[in-house]
Amino acid sequence: MSRSSVPNRTEILKLKFTQSIGLPFQKLLPESQIEQAIKELSIKYRHRLFDPFVTLWAFLSQVLDVDKSCHNTVSRVIAWLATENVEIPSTDTSAYCQARKRLPEQLLQKLFEESGESLEIMVTPEHLWCGRHVQVIDCSTVSMPDTLEISYLINISGFRTQSVSLITTLLDTDAFPTHALTQLYRDRWDVELDLKHLKTTLGMDMLRSKTPAMIRKEIYAFLLAYNLLRSLMWDAGTTYGTPPLRLSLQGTRHHLRHFLPQLKSVPSPQRDCVYSTLLKVIVHKAVPKRPQRVEPRVKKRRPKTYPYMSVPRSFLRKKLMVA
Image 1 (cartoon, one colour):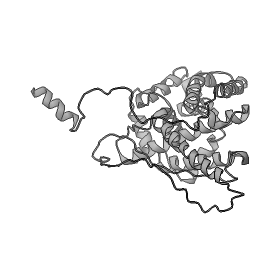
Image 2 (cartoon, helix red, strand yellow; image 1 turned 135 degrees about the vertical axis):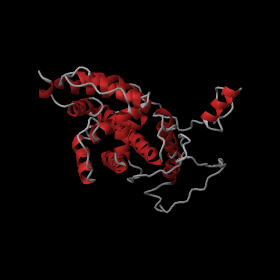
Image 3 (cartoon, one colour; image 1 turned 180 degrees about the horizontal axis):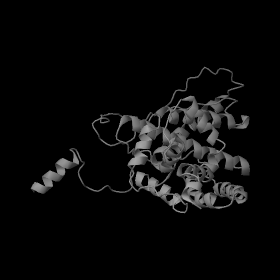
């Protein structure tokens, strides 16, 4: 078979992404939805290796991986093309980094918002609070490179209240009893856990992009990846009769990473069987419900006694050379 008669590299990568990391999320983020979003936003692009579709899934696989470097992502692409009769791309990350830069922020934002709307539609009445959808709002911070474009200072004074006054306009005590309102306020703690999953479990606490535009794209990529994992947990929980909120997001991510090579390599008739096994493994060990759990906000491990870097690294290097 000649090189000219085989599918081009972009089509090969699209297929591999669709059959691996894209398979568990095909209900929430099918290829047709991505193509429709690209069309609606009138995104124009050249026929490159990293077109918007490949760049998007490479970006999502990057934020879902433990090693979030661009080099690791490009290495994965090279490995996927190594067995195909096509030209192997360079190990240089510049093509992928430029593709991420070209990827419109509006595309990531649109897909994230649509994924949230799709997840909300999946929620059945028995999972609602008094028949209503509840929105919980909180704030958080992240770290990012101290480049001139994104350097700024935020000073936050934290405090804990000793008592809480709950004010509501839901005055129908039959439809909204006091104990339900009290439980709803207690359940707001879940937003803290969600932020913890985003920042600690997925690693969004330390962003790596060096411009405001790329920082926003990186945040949207994390939020979209988080919704995709939640959709997988919902599918597993509803399929095997386990409350989705009692499933481990970290465990789901681990199982997904371990199953991706099998999803990509097995023939199509066996792929559904592998996916069903993935769902079964996800629900194997549910997280216990601990409503009265209280944990101190302290650090167990002692930090190293090195001073903080308050000046550019280049300045410190010159100072060491002089010394």
